[in-house]
Image (cartoon, rainbow, N blue to C red; front, side):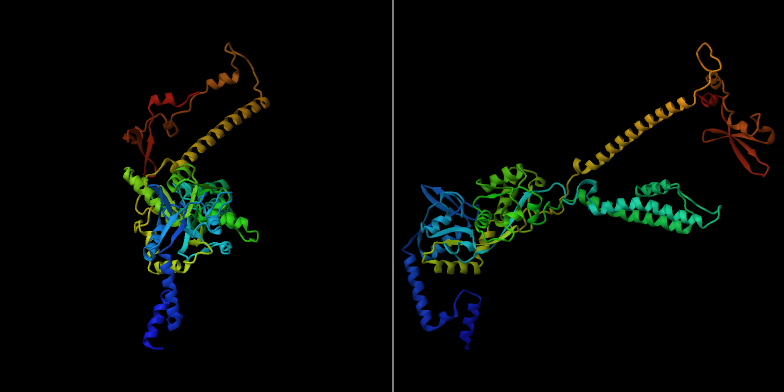
Amino acid sequence: MGLAEFVITSLCLNATCNLEDFSTGTSTYNHNRIAKLEEDLAKETLIITTLENGELSGYENKNGSVIGTGIAFDIMNIIKQKYKFNYTIILPQENVFLGDSSKTTIKDMLENKALDIAVAFLPILNGLRSSITFSTSFDLAQWSVLMNRPQDSAAGSGLLAPFTTEVWILIIFSILIVGPIIYLIVLIQSRLYKEGERESYSLSTCLWFVYGALLKQGSTVNPRRDSSRLLFSTWWLFILILTAFYTANLTAFLTLSKFTLPIKSAKDIGRNHHQWVTNKANAIRDQIIAERNDKTIYRETLMDVIGTQRVFATERDRDILNTFVRKRKMMFIRETTVLKHVLYNDYKEKASRGVDENERCTYVVAKFPIINFSTAFAYSREFKYQELFDLSIQRLIEGGIIEFKFKENLPDAEICPLDLGSKERKLRNADLLLTYIIVGGGLAVAGCVFLMEILWRQWKTKCSKKRHKPRRNWHNNNNKTFNDVSKSRITPPPSYQTLFKPPFSYIGEGGYKKQINGRDYWIVNTKDGLTQMIPQRTPSALLFQFSN
């Protein structure tokens, strides 16, 4: 193989060409045939149609004529400039590729040879290849879902957000099980020691210690054995680590603006019965209709994945965003390229109205795909210029023109990502909802227990009176029993200092009075040579010493 042939081969491996074309006879024949097609195409006025599909394709009426718009017509006009042909746009009765009504669709027009090309990004469905022809595929288009930005994380909200449900269940289980374990171990230890060396705690004391340590409260439990101390300190260490992780995660959940979406895959839409919407001229609808008409499908269909609670809207994307997504909280399934344009236009519109920056990104697009389709133009079966169009489209793809057109009007930065970076948010009342529930629930439970205590005390007093009726020995003028009068005449207990030594004075024994912290004390020397402080009560304190 010579150098010239090697260079030609290398070029052909990176471009659209046929090695056989470089043989002398074949090359001349193909060149003449392509030239003849180009000459004939320049004299043609093609009949084409399109769909109203956002930034991808569309049309508008100007001076009584239909003008094509969108990325699809940018590609079409590039091909037109190359081959110098003209085209006329006619519209279908129904703005869809596949239809389920009596109105004429693009598929019907292609099958009836009413037009030459459908200039739109149509899904390549294998079931249609027998009646229509598709061009070279532009790309593998991805369909995503747009939804309202979540105000709370799907992992949880408020005080329960830091841990998952499984972690909370295990924490509650550990609280319930550690108390009895400590009680059993201490009980076994008490059996191994003598009477004076034993330490024992009741089950309620152990449970209260576990609960109090969780809330970092003090405890009267003071274990004396090393094994008991290690057991108690192990629980304290567990609580220390648990509370440290909880505090850190709670701070992150309540202050950062990164949230998880309520769905993690396309199947979650159907599994959780979410309502979704898409425009009528969409490959999602075409795929559903094709699967419904195909009686040989035994696999999982698209409808099985994303559910049946859908709306095929005829409104424009901007109106769908406001009517169905913002007001009705539905999910918007659309081409990822279109959704990016929708988000960007919504952001610019809010910025022009002076909306605060923190409130401009009210929607978010999920990262995972709903479905992927290869998209292309569609030809009628007898369209003789398919080779020229496919060759031009292939060169546009290899030159990066198609990819450039998809991103031409979009910024380089990601538009309204799920993670808004360093933007922090203020705590809302909903974040503290669980706190209100705990306080209200605690007050309600305390009130119920208090009411039960009153009822229990009244019932107990009533039963006690029935069992032990007091004997009435005599009655006075006030109808009081002897027991009542005797109780009213009980002498109050003596003052505190009389319990040590009357008559209220220690001066003879070398004692003296001293005021400490605003209170009077007797300072007395004991027999052991030590000093003892005895509080002195004033006579007025006797008024408050005893009361009925």
